[in-house]
Length: 437
Image 1: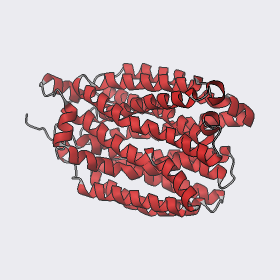
Image 2 (image 1 turned 180 degrees about the horizontal axis):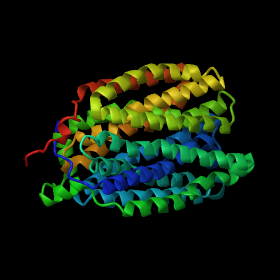
Image 3 (image 1 turned 45 degrees about the vertical axis):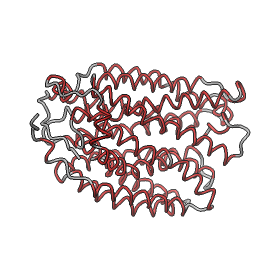
Image 4 (image 1 turned 180 degrees about the vertical axis):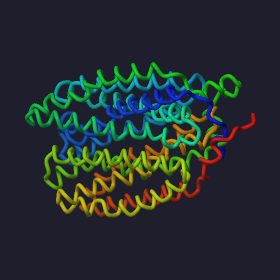
């Protein structure tokens, strides 16, 4: 296991702020693109692209296509991680944003099953796969641009910026969907209104691209290039010398990601179909909870610079085990104040687990393989976590007829993540020291 030990090269405060802004805005817009599909899967993808199926089967099929994006993510992580370690972080971030934007607009323009038959779901899966490749390369690059520009002792806090882009993307996606559902009749929404959030991506990606193109290359990569420490096959070194670190990093992320996607996606379906609430009500609960999620990230990331990544992550994971067990029993009360409490508390705990994650993943790998290593660990965790979670939640509720099964699933993956973080070393104290070549 090889933690990073090189000192962060000197970066001007202006460059650092620009890198953080780029990481936040770019990540927020890429995740807006990724999340609007999750919201659409919960609300409309089934009837539009799988019209012959029952409500349950259509929802299951919609979430299966949602999972396709997660299957593609490691491919994006490996390919863009390889070239990010070979030719630079910035170029891969521009490519990932372009792919995500093109695929998202493509989904917005895609004819449904009624118009072109079986070609519709096939093309939908293809575009979702492209989305997955794009977002697979985004997180690692955005995290490294933020953490590798960070001043001494602030890698955790700076690394929180791309993490906070995730709930920011959720807020944008759900505000847009909420606005569309409120302004249009149900028939209009089902017919064409659901396409609006996808088509809006063209404008948002243009803004993010303008910001991202103005950022300098990561100083750590520039230094690696100058000192000729770049390797020809970064992924090979990751898999042969750092495979245990990759698996443990993935393990720490399974619960945070899996529970977050049930929290963001499946609960929308559960609240409307099982508890009888309107789409607007469920979207509003999620929108209100997301700023708490962001605050949890910022606070825990800051504390990780002082107390250590492992300590903050461990206590947050213990809290997640407890909150995971209580979440669905509180949702099942069908009392809006209690449901809001459950959403806010879950958001806070998810935030505290996610806050130190960027710095932790970056510090686990040396600069010449960092994009590949951090991306691969993150994306494997995403497949086993968020990629499966909405599907598993839907299947477990259908099989057992109770949300207790979902709560049990939550607890199991939370314990897995707790064990993984306990097996990793502390990284924040050694990360600032120079490493001899």
